[in-house]
Each structure stands twice: as C-alpha cells, then as structure tokens.
Length: 250
Ligand SMILES: [Zn+2]
Image 1 (cartoon, rainbow, N blue to C red):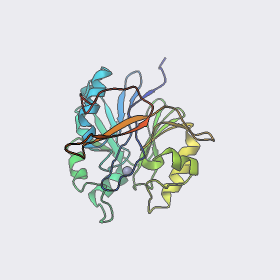
Image 2 (spheres, protein in one colour; image 1 turned 120 degrees about the vertical axis):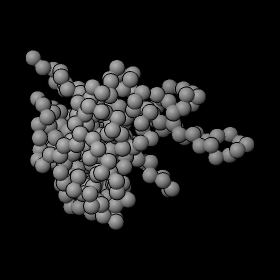
Image 3 (spheres, rainbow, N blue to C red; image 1 turned 180 degrees about the vertical axis):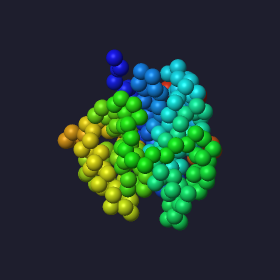
C-alpha cells in the first residue's frame, strides 16, 4: 500500500518587483513518495547554500534525489539542477528547443542554459507524463513554450504558469506578462485541475473561489545604505525575531 505523495516547499516564492534588479524569488519543492524523491525547480543560483542547508535539515541527501523536474529554463528556476548528481533532469522538449534558440526579447533565459543542462542526465518529455502513482507532469505552455507543472492528487506545483495568487484571483496573467495567448489558457487549465496550487512566485493557495493563502509569509531585507547611519530593514509578514548574524540564514 503506497502513501500519497508529500509536497514539501523548500522555498516559497514571493511576487515582488524592484526598480533596479530582478528579485526572482521563486518556489522550490520536494515531492516524496514511498520510493521516489523529486525536486521541482531549483531556484536561482543565490539559493544554493540555503537550498543545501534546508535539504540537510530534512535529512535529505542531494545524491538520493532521483528526479529534478524543471518547469522552465529561466534564470530563477534551473540554476541549481546540478546539485543532484544522481537525478534525471526532466523538462519538455519544446523548452529545450527554446533554450537552444533564445530570442533577443528574452533576457531571463541564460544563453548557455541548454548546453549546461546537457551536461546532466537530461531527459525530455514530449507530452504529459505520469512519473509514478499520483505524480503527473502537466503541460502549461505560455510563460515559455515548454512550461510544465507537477500534479500530485489535487495539488499542483505550477511553475510560472501560475506565478502568483493575484493572477489566480484575476484568472489572468498579469504579474509576468507573456506574449503568448497560451499563457492565459494554461492559467485557467491549472485553476481547473487543482484545488491547491504552489505558484512559481508565491506561497501556496487554495483555488477557491475565493483564492486564499494556505500559509503565512515572513521575509526581512536589510539595506546597508548608509556607511555611518543605521541600516534600513524592511519586514513583510509575520515572523519571530531572529538575528541577521548568521546571514544568509538557514
Ligand atoms: Zn519564469
């Protein structure tokens, strides 16, 4: 008798924009079944030591991850796929073709990413694919040509096909606008498929209606902007006080 898959969010995305850089705070999830350990998306390179630390805390050896599913090849989702030496890295064949011929309009896809991923145990899929009981890759094109999500039961890890709760509530792609009309179709497909969604840049939502968050959120950012004055700190969400002394944290 197999237990249902368990989704553990390693990084919870956050929809945020800044005026001089791309924050790229994206969702990374661990999916465990009786005999499989899968990672969905790997975040930007800046996640690297924290991602390793969080896996260590969970007692997960990166070498025991058997599958990495990449929703798409943007800089903030695929950069740590190499942390899992035994894993088969799964992506859609349309996404790999896109990575190999990135358009001038796209500044979010590193031109080398296709070549880099080919150094790993890369495997492409060409259609929706069941990975194991109750774990299925879903095609959600539009944000990029080969965007995919992972459906476990009624829970969807959506990548940027559903980037944030606001888009889900509006049933329209707004936060990360796309040139493709498929983006809105995939957003609606995701909302129809799942009752719980982990957006690419937001914490988990219950689809509703109304769309509601499942968890609290807490983030602090400290700005060292004055060499002799006090630092400035921005706090969002509810959290217990902790020190920045161990930066960058867990
Ligand atoms: Zn993206």
